[in-house]
Length: 62
Image (cartoon, rainbow, N blue to C red; front, side, top):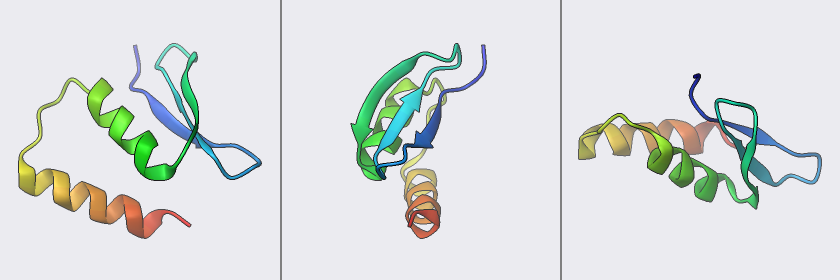
């Protein structure tokens, strides 16, 4: 099974797609979508990794 992913819809909202292709949740903000991805992830992160990850994601979002 592949990792969950985030896709942006035409109306600018974000949705989280499971590794199986099912929509886990839709109509999310970018921040809410990444928080859901973090909860679904099986990989533990250190606080420093979390901060670096969020900074990169927020810089990449429109």
